[in-house]
Length: 368
Ligand SMILES: Nc1ncnc2c1ncn2[C@@H]1O[C@H](COP(=O)(O)OP(=O)(O)OP(=O)(O)O)[C@@H](O)[C@H]1O
Ligand SMILES: [Mg+2]
Image 1 (cartoon, rainbow, N blue to C red):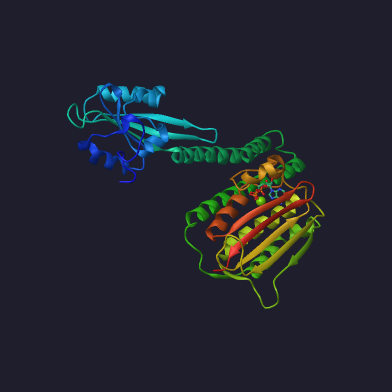
Image 2: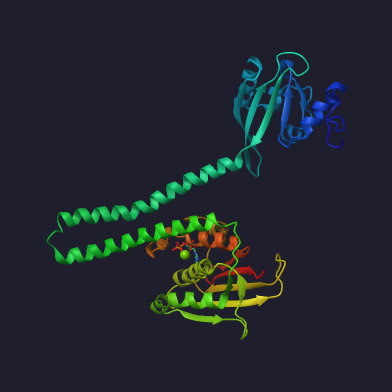
């Protein structure tokens, strides 16, 4: 019994009476921390996970001292005084310099007397649940905020058109143009949200179609042609060797979305008159991948991104300069969508940026 209680030495109190050895073996098999607390709140048994959480010397010690936080201690005391079968719950928070882990602690009153007397205290790590809940709340708040600004502009102009500007034809034209722009903005936001939820929904389904990456790049550049010309972008495309189309298993629409956002960002944030370099390469191997890959680099010579922003860039709604991005019609969802699509294709996206020199987004996609 390598992980059993009798085999581990946690001080002089670690010895478990022979008749309780099966219980000890049972508790040792549970991956969550468990404490069996007996009369006088003394710990009768602790499984290895509990030792990891609360310390090496537990058996024989006061559970109240081992747990120490007011709410969990109160829950344990209430359970100890209650009828068998009673459950009391509290949040137990473990704070280390690196992170905070939140546990749902349950104190379950066992039999009133006899061999199995006492309270069984269990700890369940619910940090990820709380995190997901927090993300959901942030997401709803962000969406509401993003929708509210164009809506405020629209309502304001509707009022003006109904009132003071009613008979002012030139003002009406101007306002209607702004209203149309704000409506387009809302439309784009809703479109991006829908595409994000669609991408998330099928993230685990591997794409099977054979896609030629050269075609994806060609179609995307054709769609972005007006923007490229308007901004006077100097575009260079370095493709694959003749006869090589860059085939890989993929979802053509989604890969177009990826290339579209990366190139559009390079145009938008690279600045008017900037250079955008697109390079598609085939490699027989690549670190971290088991087979051949295609790499696509999209580089601009814009002002670059401060390294502190890089880890968060693919979060939904994250923008380095939200005012500037919004002015350009951005919603901050582009790279979040890119990340999910790249995940679905089992690829990798890395960002390399030098302030004042430019940014390169490197996409690595497996070919099998
Ligand atoms: N090539 C780049 N150079 C400098 N900053 C960039 C570049 N690409 C992205 N960023 C920064 O990353 C942020 C997030 O990009 P993302 O594509 O997710 O959103 P967006 O372009 O603002 O809006 P959307 O793509 O939804 O229209 C941008 O707001 C911008 O601050
Ligand atoms: Mg974008």
